[in-house]
Image 1 (tube, rainbow, N blue to C red):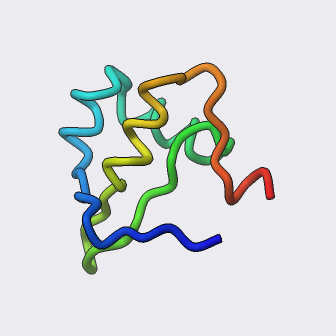
Image 2 (cartoon, one colour; image 1 turned 180 degrees about the vertical axis):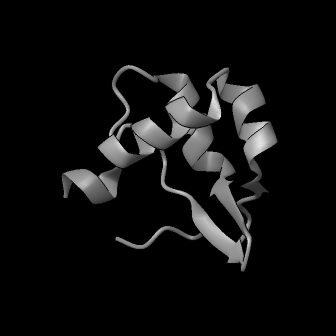
Image 3 (tube, rainbow, N blue to C red; image 1 turned 135 degrees about the horizontal axis):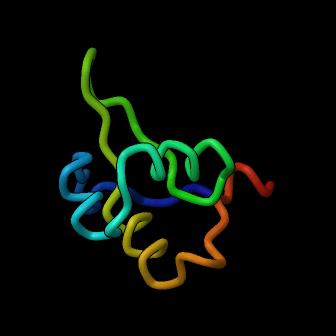
Length: 71
């Protein structure tokens, strides 16, 4: 199932850290394990996370599983 992302904002790492309270290394580790939303490449040297994915993580961080990793 495809998700409509046209109205979804992209967050940079500073805002993701602020919203989640996690360090960069913890975000990277959890992302690799599939327990944090996947980043999206937005340029040669920049990435972002969809705000709705981060909000979903913040709502239930202990039970979050990335859909791509569990499918």
